Image (cartoon, rainbow, N blue to C red):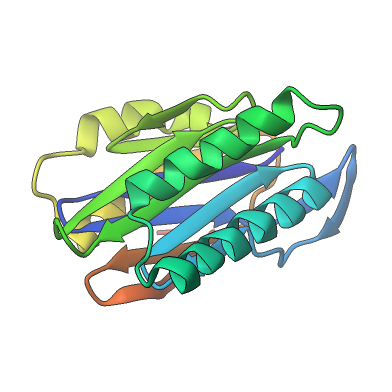
Length: 202
């Protein structure tokens, strides 16, 4: 009952994640942050079993930080996505698989381009221009297809995400009130204004 979304331009990538933490028919909290800053140019939006998402994200985050300490340079978004996928695939074949789906967004300072990756709990990984996971994402693909264009600005990308959230809140029976939004670009990681029913009611 979760939703994460992602969209990228030439030099930025934006991820959005709803903040509801629920199990079965019970909503436990409505301020859960599912966006994790891995480095100043890399961010994960995660969904799945709450314990798995926290533990796996911390495991990947610490190992990426350790790699930087040992080698004096950071992994690129592509390298980080491959590293994450490899670990998820290894655990999938063990007795303790992680039930984690994620969108990986990053900015490569060498190529000065952004990247966005779709990664699911079966360790399927693919680079995308836009995508989403969860129930809400089913209502967003047609919006992404219609409104995405080459060379779009971060303001235009944010507007597309607003349209997606508005459609989710209109059509999905599950109440997903608020989405946190983050961007990575040449200026690093930054939060953007939350997208909520109150903000887009007009």
